[in-house]
Amino acid sequence: MDVKGRDPETECYRVTHDVDGKTVSALVPERFAADLRLTGARPSHQDAYVWMAGNKTKIETAITQLAHGEKPRAPFDQIVLLKES
Image (cartoon, rainbow, N blue to C red):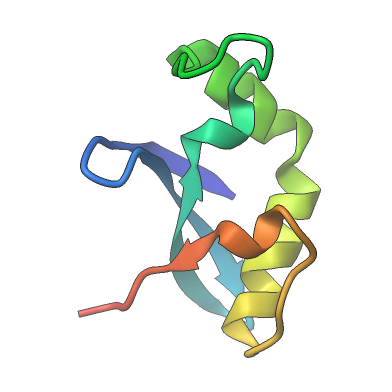
């Protein structure tokens, strides 16, 4: 999985992951990495990257499941695949 940066419009991080030999792009909500004790606070980029690194396997599994038409377990079911143009 490669993190391609933050998309300010969607408040998500763009990531790519290879599924069945194809690169799949997805949006991972930044709120996943937020400190739940601080209502409304956005995570720092460092916090988001640390969280994604710690949850890499779960994120990759969710992307693979979505690419295969399956539904991942919550909260990873909120990840959205991007259509390739």
